[in-house]
Length: 291
Image 1 (spheres, one colour):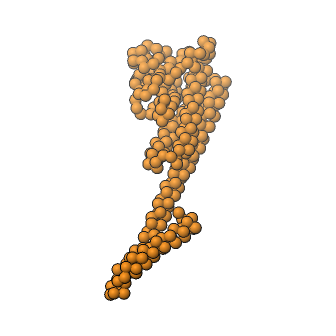
Image 2 (cartoon, helix red, strand yellow; image 1 turned 180 degrees about the horizontal axis):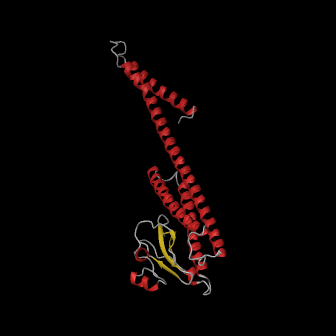
Image 3 (cartoon, rainbow, N blue to C red; image 1 turned 180 degrees about the vertical axis):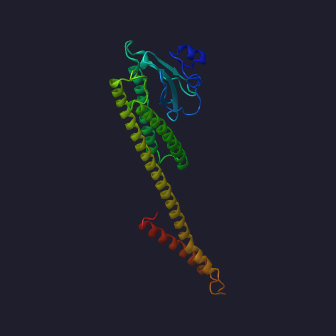
């Protein structure tokens, strides 16, 4: 079902469930990040899965929430349409064989959600690579803002993946099931083990992405420091070029009486000293590769 009312949810559920579960299943999707979980409630298992897919702009992620109520005989899924983007595509269940056990269908849904995390990883690494390639073209303020956004996104993504991994661990430990392994027998638990390994890899890759992001931040800081050094070097060269002419002009501004009344001394010599000192300084700075 997609965005059902609470009455539709109650009509579809195979057993009596807690009112809190009915409220959680029937509640509409919100802007907040839903938290994945799997809980055993005696005769049924209640779960919340969160698929994460990049939107068309590549900078935002759509959190697609799927609520699950499962018994050994029936699997009920409720897909909620997020504020941005479509509802989760449950074609993996529609393409399943009719005689597949509920536990296998449950795993197919969980495994398909885990695959969205792999797609998200590809998008994150592509974004980091693109940002690093354009770091010399973009303004530092733009890069710094995007780095901050990516850092917060990585924290939220890792929290969601870790919560999903913890929920699957409860299945592997046997803490989430119905009766004596009626919903998740040993062969189905082994399938969940493969998905758990995938989530462990996703968590490790997110840590790698965070390290790469730190490397881009260090690159940005070194670039800013280098630009500041270049500006300081240019200002120093300008101040050095002005220093000697200022000394010459100040020297000729002293009171020498009639010693330098001739135009030759007052203009030609002072102008020559200024031009010659400037040329010598420029040649020296060029030779030392300061400019």
